[in-house]
Length: 271
Ligand code: SF4
Picture 1 (cartoon, rainbow, N blue to C red):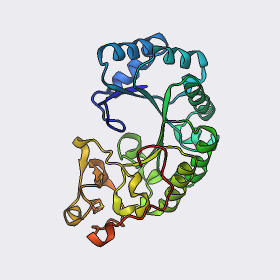
Picture 2: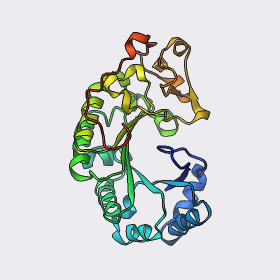
Picture 3: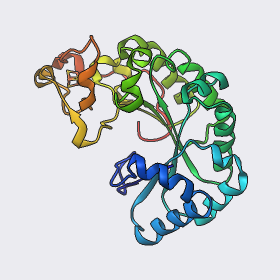
């Protein structure tokens, strides 16, 4: 599990601190159970105005008692961010390379919700996940409609992604249809949803209200083309790692293009 503190009033997740990978591995064994709860309690006590965003695969929360104990801390602004990659157990398990992960994660999310803990579902979009994205959105709408938020996230080309780029990379232009269908499914189910890490020029305009400037300042870049673009201020730009690969369909938006017809029903929250 990893933690980030969010500033009050910002959407999701403005990270101010995070364990390094090594610290995360070391911490994992020690923070489980009471150690985890102690950290959340300490955040509540010492950072009373900071929102807390905790990343977790959700699997341990299949134990209802752990979800109940986390809820009993009563942190005033805690969200648990849980990745979910498919509505099919086998596909999710393949993506995370862990048999049984889907069942544990879904059960964990249900337990957290049942205990009143807020949950954000995070779906990273790549070749292995986009095909069933609308089906996953329908699954969420029908089975987990009380999640706080669903983040549909563009790929950051770091770590294992970089090592498996050929298996994972897909030009976002080629999954525009799936993205529209998924957002539509979530909107109809009144599930709050956002699109992270995508450039506006590769998204259909009806999705622009769902796109967020989600890339942290220190790794956020624009390319030369963007200097001529009418929506640069609203566009989230690129990860620095996008130098490895980015869409072939990038184009500067001219002012006449910027009228945005919102054809989708509004979602529950801020869109
Ligand atoms: S041209 Fe650049 S600023 Fe404009 S929408 Fe595309 S990526 Fe964003």
